[in-house]
Length: 230
Image: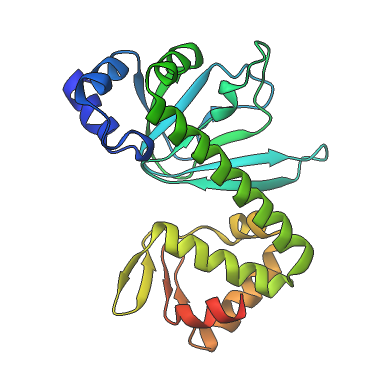
Protein backbone atom coordinates (compact mmCIF):
# COMPACT_ATOMS: atom_id res chain seq x y z
CA UNK A 1 0.00 0.00 0.00
CA UNK A 2 1.34 3.43 -0.94
CA UNK A 3 2.37 5.97 1.71
CA UNK A 4 -0.24 8.35 0.26
CA UNK A 5 -3.01 5.80 0.84
CA UNK A 6 -1.79 5.05 4.37
CA UNK A 7 -1.75 8.77 5.11
CA UNK A 8 -5.36 9.12 3.91
CA UNK A 9 -6.47 6.30 6.21
CA UNK A 10 -4.57 7.67 9.20
CA UNK A 11 -6.24 11.07 8.81
CA UNK A 12 -9.55 9.29 9.48
CA UNK A 13 -8.46 7.72 12.76
CA UNK A 14 -10.27 9.49 15.60
CA UNK A 15 -7.28 10.31 17.80
CA UNK A 16 -5.19 11.45 14.81
CA UNK A 17 -7.69 13.86 13.24
CA UNK A 18 -6.35 17.37 12.77
CA UNK A 19 -2.72 16.58 13.56
CA UNK A 20 -0.06 18.21 11.30
CA UNK A 21 0.39 16.43 7.96
CA UNK A 22 4.18 16.16 8.32
CA UNK A 23 3.67 14.47 11.68
CA UNK A 24 1.18 12.02 10.15
CA UNK A 25 3.53 11.29 7.24
CA UNK A 26 6.27 10.31 9.67
CA UNK A 27 3.80 8.17 11.59
CA UNK A 28 2.58 6.48 8.39
CA UNK A 29 6.14 5.54 7.50
CA UNK A 30 6.35 3.50 10.74
CA UNK A 31 3.13 1.55 10.20
CA UNK A 32 2.16 -1.59 8.32
CA UNK A 33 -1.28 -2.36 6.95
CA UNK A 34 -2.96 -5.71 6.50
CA UNK A 35 -6.33 -7.24 5.67
CA UNK A 36 -7.87 -9.78 8.03
CA UNK A 37 -10.73 -12.00 6.93
CA UNK A 38 -13.96 -12.44 8.88
CA UNK A 39 -13.40 -14.47 12.07
CA UNK A 40 -9.64 -14.07 11.71
CA UNK A 41 -7.64 -13.41 14.89
CA UNK A 42 -5.49 -10.28 15.12
CA UNK A 43 -3.92 -11.28 18.41
CA UNK A 44 -4.40 -13.99 21.05
CA UNK A 45 -4.18 -14.18 24.85
CA UNK A 46 -0.63 -14.59 26.14
CA UNK A 47 0.90 -13.19 22.95
CA UNK A 48 3.40 -10.45 23.73
CA UNK A 49 1.76 -7.04 23.45
CA UNK A 50 4.11 -5.39 20.97
CA UNK A 51 1.76 -3.36 18.76
CA UNK A 52 -1.03 -0.85 18.87
CA UNK A 53 -3.68 -1.08 16.14
CA UNK A 54 -5.71 1.46 14.17
CA UNK A 55 -8.87 0.10 12.53
CA UNK A 56 -9.46 1.45 9.02
CA UNK A 57 -12.47 -0.53 7.84
CA UNK A 58 -14.67 -3.26 9.29
CA UNK A 59 -15.34 -4.21 12.90
CA UNK A 60 -13.33 -6.06 15.54
CA UNK A 61 -14.57 -7.72 18.72
CA UNK A 62 -12.44 -7.86 21.85
CA UNK A 63 -13.09 -11.15 23.64
CA UNK A 64 -12.12 -12.54 27.05
CA UNK A 65 -12.31 -16.30 27.62
CA UNK A 66 -13.07 -17.88 30.99
CA UNK A 67 -10.99 -20.85 32.23
CA UNK A 68 -13.90 -23.03 31.09
CA UNK A 69 -13.73 -21.55 27.59
CA UNK A 70 -16.84 -19.38 27.83
CA UNK A 71 -16.70 -16.19 25.78
CA UNK A 72 -17.42 -12.66 26.98
CA UNK A 73 -17.27 -9.83 24.45
CA UNK A 74 -15.74 -6.80 26.15
CA UNK A 75 -16.04 -4.33 23.29
CA UNK A 76 -16.85 -3.84 19.62
CA UNK A 77 -14.34 -1.68 17.74
CA UNK A 78 -15.46 0.29 14.68
CA UNK A 79 -13.68 2.16 11.86
CA UNK A 80 -11.47 5.00 13.07
CA UNK A 81 -10.89 3.48 16.50
CA UNK A 82 -7.76 2.27 18.28
CA UNK A 83 -7.30 -1.06 20.05
CA UNK A 84 -4.53 -3.12 21.62
CA UNK A 85 -3.55 -0.16 23.80
CA UNK A 86 -2.33 -2.58 26.49
CA UNK A 87 0.91 -2.53 24.50
CA UNK A 88 1.55 0.93 25.96
CA UNK A 89 2.04 -0.52 29.45
CA UNK A 90 5.52 -0.06 30.86
CA UNK A 91 6.28 -3.72 31.48
CA UNK A 92 8.46 -5.22 28.77
CA UNK A 93 6.86 -8.64 29.22
CA UNK A 94 3.26 -7.38 28.99
CA UNK A 95 0.97 -9.84 27.24
CA UNK A 96 -2.52 -9.62 25.78
CA UNK A 97 -5.22 -11.12 27.98
CA UNK A 98 -7.96 -11.13 25.35
CA UNK A 99 -8.59 -12.06 21.73
CA UNK A 100 -9.06 -9.47 18.99
CA UNK A 101 -11.14 -11.06 16.23
CA UNK A 102 -12.50 -9.64 12.97
CA UNK A 103 -16.31 -9.54 12.84
CA UNK A 104 -16.14 -8.92 9.11
CA UNK A 105 -13.31 -8.30 6.67
CA UNK A 106 -11.13 -5.60 8.19
CA UNK A 107 -8.21 -3.40 7.24
CA UNK A 108 -5.90 -2.63 10.14
CA UNK A 109 -2.80 -0.53 10.60
CA UNK A 110 -0.23 -1.79 13.12
CA UNK A 111 2.46 0.25 14.82
CA UNK A 112 5.02 -0.97 17.31
CA UNK A 113 4.71 0.09 20.92
CA UNK A 114 8.15 1.70 20.91
CA UNK A 115 7.45 3.76 17.80
CA UNK A 116 4.07 4.94 19.06
CA UNK A 117 5.47 5.92 22.46
CA UNK A 118 8.13 7.93 20.65
CA UNK A 119 5.41 9.82 18.76
CA UNK A 120 3.43 10.38 21.97
CA UNK A 121 6.48 12.02 23.54
CA UNK A 122 6.77 14.40 20.59
CA UNK A 123 3.14 15.52 20.57
CA UNK A 124 1.42 16.59 23.79
CA UNK A 125 -1.95 16.82 22.02
CA UNK A 126 -1.80 13.19 20.88
CA UNK A 127 -0.65 12.14 24.35
CA UNK A 128 -3.68 13.83 25.90
CA UNK A 129 -6.02 12.27 23.34
CA UNK A 130 -4.64 8.82 24.16
CA UNK A 131 -5.15 9.37 27.88
CA UNK A 132 -8.74 10.44 27.24
CA UNK A 133 -9.29 7.36 25.06
CA UNK A 134 -8.05 5.01 27.77
CA UNK A 135 -10.22 6.80 30.33
CA UNK A 136 -13.26 6.46 28.06
CA UNK A 137 -12.65 2.73 27.65
CA UNK A 138 -12.38 2.32 31.41
CA UNK A 139 -15.72 4.11 31.85
CA UNK A 140 -17.29 1.76 29.29
CA UNK A 141 -16.08 -1.23 31.28
CA UNK A 142 -17.45 0.30 34.50
CA UNK A 143 -20.81 0.93 32.82
CA UNK A 144 -20.94 -2.68 31.65
CA UNK A 145 -20.21 -3.95 35.16
CA UNK A 146 -22.96 -1.71 36.55
CA UNK A 147 -25.38 -3.08 33.95
CA UNK A 148 -24.57 -6.65 34.98
CA UNK A 149 -25.06 -5.86 38.67
CA UNK A 150 -28.06 -3.55 38.66
CA UNK A 151 -30.09 -4.20 35.49
CA UNK A 152 -32.38 -7.04 34.52
CA UNK A 153 -31.49 -9.11 31.47
CA UNK A 154 -34.13 -7.31 29.38
CA UNK A 155 -32.82 -3.90 30.42
CA UNK A 156 -29.22 -4.95 29.70
CA UNK A 157 -30.13 -6.08 26.20
CA UNK A 158 -32.12 -2.91 25.54
CA UNK A 159 -29.29 -0.71 26.78
CA UNK A 160 -26.82 -2.61 24.61
CA UNK A 161 -29.00 -2.31 21.48
CA UNK A 162 -29.27 1.45 21.96
CA UNK A 163 -25.52 1.94 22.52
CA UNK A 164 -24.67 -0.33 19.59
CA UNK A 165 -27.06 1.50 17.25
CA UNK A 166 -25.88 4.95 18.35
CA UNK A 167 -22.23 3.91 17.84
CA UNK A 168 -22.53 2.17 14.46
CA UNK A 169 -25.89 3.14 12.97
CA UNK A 170 -27.26 5.91 10.78
CA UNK A 171 -30.17 8.13 11.83
CA UNK A 172 -32.98 8.89 9.40
CA UNK A 173 -36.50 10.03 10.28
CA UNK A 174 -35.79 9.41 13.97
CA UNK A 175 -34.93 5.78 13.24
CA UNK A 176 -31.47 4.29 13.66
CA UNK A 177 -30.37 1.61 11.21
CA UNK A 178 -27.28 -0.55 11.61
CA UNK A 179 -26.46 -2.33 8.34
CA UNK A 180 -24.35 -5.04 9.98
CA UNK A 181 -26.07 -6.64 12.97
CA UNK A 182 -24.49 -9.03 15.46
CA UNK A 183 -25.55 -12.64 15.87
CA UNK A 184 -27.73 -13.59 18.84
CA UNK A 185 -24.77 -15.49 20.30
CA UNK A 186 -22.63 -12.34 20.11
CA UNK A 187 -25.33 -10.24 21.79
CA UNK A 188 -25.55 -12.89 24.51
CA UNK A 189 -21.79 -12.70 25.02
CA UNK A 190 -21.99 -8.90 25.25
CA UNK A 191 -24.83 -8.84 27.79
CA UNK A 192 -24.26 -11.87 30.00
CA UNK A 193 -27.43 -13.57 28.76
CA UNK A 194 -28.24 -16.87 27.09
CA UNK A 195 -28.84 -17.01 23.34
CA UNK A 196 -32.43 -18.17 23.93
CA UNK A 197 -33.11 -15.22 26.23
CA UNK A 198 -31.70 -12.82 23.63
CA UNK A 199 -33.94 -14.35 20.94
CA UNK A 200 -37.02 -14.05 23.18
CA UNK A 201 -36.38 -10.41 24.09
CA UNK A 202 -35.56 -9.37 20.52
CA UNK A 203 -38.83 -10.88 19.33
CA UNK A 204 -40.73 -9.17 22.16
CA UNK A 205 -39.26 -5.80 21.21
CA UNK A 206 -40.16 -6.38 17.57
CA UNK A 207 -43.78 -7.22 18.49
CA UNK A 208 -43.88 -4.03 20.58
CA UNK A 209 -42.77 -2.01 17.55
CA UNK A 210 -39.56 -0.85 19.23
CA UNK A 211 -37.12 -2.56 16.85
CA UNK A 212 -37.01 -4.53 13.63
CA UNK A 213 -34.19 -6.81 12.57
CA UNK A 214 -32.95 -9.43 10.16
CA UNK A 215 -29.91 -11.68 10.35
CA UNK A 216 -27.88 -8.83 8.83
CA UNK A 217 -29.40 -5.55 10.00
CA UNK A 218 -31.00 -3.82 12.97
CA UNK A 219 -33.41 -0.87 12.96
CA UNK A 220 -34.34 0.97 16.13
CA UNK A 221 -37.85 2.21 15.35
CA UNK A 222 -38.42 3.91 18.71
CA UNK A 223 -35.07 4.93 20.26
CA UNK A 224 -36.90 6.82 22.99
CA UNK A 225 -38.48 3.58 24.23
CA UNK A 226 -35.09 1.94 24.68
CA UNK A 227 -33.69 5.09 26.28
CA UNK A 228 -36.53 5.48 28.78
CA UNK A 229 -36.57 1.85 29.86
CA UNK A 230 -32.80 1.30 29.77
